[in-house]
Amino acid sequence: MLLNIVSLLLLVVNVLNGAQWPIPYERVSSRPPNNPYCQPGLILFCPTGQAKDSMIFAQPSDTIEIFALKKPVWSFKFGDLMAKFKIMHDALGFRSQLTGKNWTMEWYELDQLFNCTFPHVLPNDTFIWCNQGALCVYEGIVDSMWNGSSDLSMLKKIGETSGVFYETWSIWSDPGTAATLYFDSYDCASFVIRSLNTLSQYGVQFYSDVRLNYTRLNIYSQEPELIGTYDYIIQHTNSSLKNDFIKFYRDFDSKKPTTEDWLKSLLQIYESFFIQKRFYFYYNDVYWYLRLKATPLEVTFDEISIGEIIQPKYA
Image (cartoon, rainbow, N blue to C red):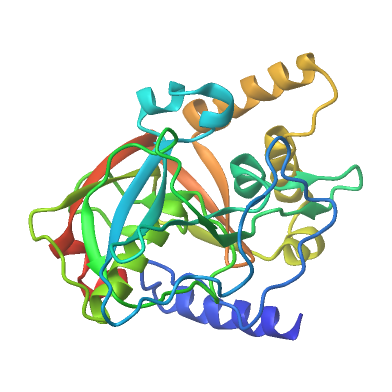
């Protein structure tokens, strides 16, 4: 709790002095326990995965090929439907030329995507966030699951230890290359980009003509306004803001008793996004208020070259 208060005070000072965008993603020294309330739903996290630090070590005489893997989100339930909207999940595949063995490495949500994007709002108006993500490594590459890839080469082990919270959204000032990025996503695609960047630092040899595509869920906003932590909002803001804040997230809560409740919430969600153009955004344990632009939401399928990926900004 003390660490959160100190972090909030530093953030307030930063904002008052003119925020330096994007706000850095906050890493942790150890993984907090996942709340028992949080459940993955249809598919358990990493059901066939290996133990921690189980990634292969290459023999000096071996060459490990790397594959950039891609499949539609929720393909286990909807097949290729999400691919039509360019909403894709990304991972890395590894193959030993010496032994012929394959491995898959992916970083994704412990409790599925929607649970990571919005909190559960309990009857007493408290929030439970189920927004942890983690690394999953398992033997084999299921060819029927993943779409084609680009070969790379590597000799080193990599890991993901200090980034444990999944972040779905990328928050921008505007579409286009000249826009200001306020908050960057921390998801399966950014994991692949960071991993390839790390591998390049270990001396990986890249094919220079490789170009990869990654899905981004973008929100376009005026400059974000810092509100504070949940406790600060509940205890120190006016009742109008507090009630609006809780109602906003209650509309997005996935646990609704009836279809009628869902339909009502969908209408409210549409009104929030496209008519009122407002959004409460959670990042690094604090909340921000977003005044959305005329086009508030866009899914993009960005193309990134290997040359861009190995730049320091992706480290």
